[in-house]
Amino acid sequence: MRYSSSHSSVYETFIKTMNTFRWPVTVYYEDTDAGGVVYHANYLKFFERARTEMLRAVGMNQQALLEQGTGFVVRHMEIDFLKGAKLDDHLEIITTVSELRKASLTFCQELVNPEGVLLSKATVKVACIDNENMRPKALPQLISLELNCSDC
Image (cartoon, rainbow, N blue to C red; front, side, top):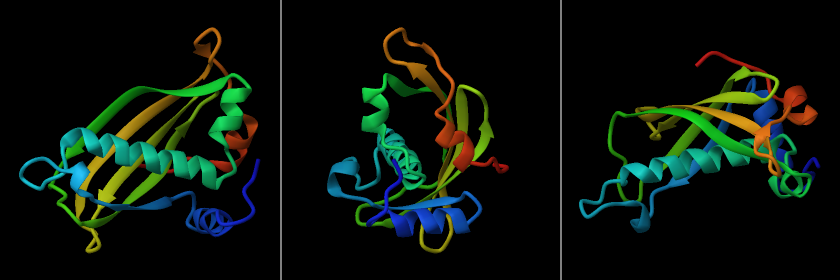
């Protein structure tokens, strides 16, 4: 399942940075409210995309997992909105894994601007499930092998 083409450089960057994954975010008009500030629910989309790309960077293909009956669901989330992001901002999400268990993993995510100012942060616990019976299932071995924990 490992990507060897365009995603290889993302994967190499991920590995070299001690399991800290960085994903760029550009704020579009559709992301903002009437005041030109990112609508709060859209931060969840930004964080979700970064988690998805992190898994892709270590070779996890979510479509292939779905075909095998494996899925991921958000079990718990804590989010702090510290400063507003605005239209046309170029930002970055920094994602690390803080806890890796048999059937779940916890991500720490930060949204920062180019100056490194923290705009939002989230802790997200994701459970691995069997899609047929919706019960917990052991994480795929590739995730356990590729992701190491770090402190939030």
